[in-house]
Every structure is written in structure tokens, then in C-alpha cells.
Amino acid sequence: MAVDIKSLNHAQLVDLISKAQVRQTELRKEKVVKLREKVHALIKAEGYVFEDIFGQGRVKTRRSTGTVAPKYRNPANPEQTWSGRGKRPHWFNDALKAGKREKDLAI
Image 1 (cartoon, rainbow, N blue to C red):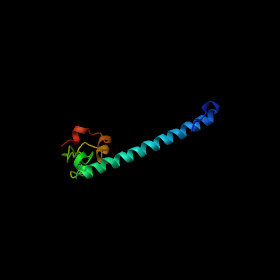
Image 2: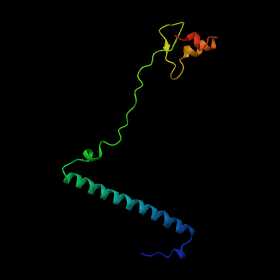
Image 3: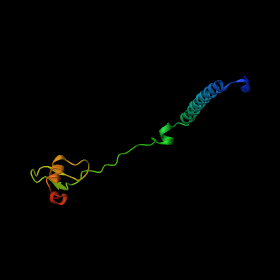
Image 4: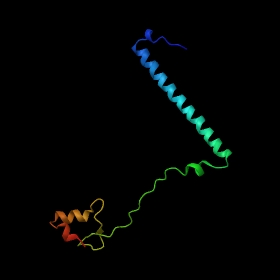
């Protein structure tokens, strides 16, 4: 199927290009599916499973920082502490507004 692109106007060319790009993407996906099937068949024929050859893939692990010792204590209520990480607690902000300094609240 030959298309005479010289006879097409701008809108027709844009439409043709977009359709061609969509088709190109479809063909690429089809090729990838076929290749994936071939690889899986070859692995199975050899008596393995995909994970034996390629592993589990990227396994995202979250690094645990653990608990952090408290760094500040509320003088009005000694049970309330703050590690200095994250959002400041209300009692800490209130103490700062009352004129205390951070080192006054430090443990």
C-alpha cells in the first residue's frame, strides 16, 4: 500500500503520522510478546523457571531507621517527648512561643 504523501494536506499528514506511530507501537508490543513467549518456552524446555534465571527482579526494600531516642521533653508534662524528627509537636511550638529556647527543652 503506497500512499502519495505529496497529495496530502497538513491535517491529513498529521493524521497519517499519528496512525503510523500507533501502529508502530502495536507492532513493537506484539514483537515483545512473541519474544517473551519464546524466552519462557526455552527456559521451560531446559527445566527451569523464569525466576531461576533472572531472579525475583527488583525487590524494593525499605530501610528501617528504627526508633530514635527522645531529644526534647515537655517541661509541663514529662511524659511528652520528641525525637527532633518530623513535624514539631504543639507543646514544643507553644514552649518556643512562650520564650523558651530549644536547649531549654533538651533532655
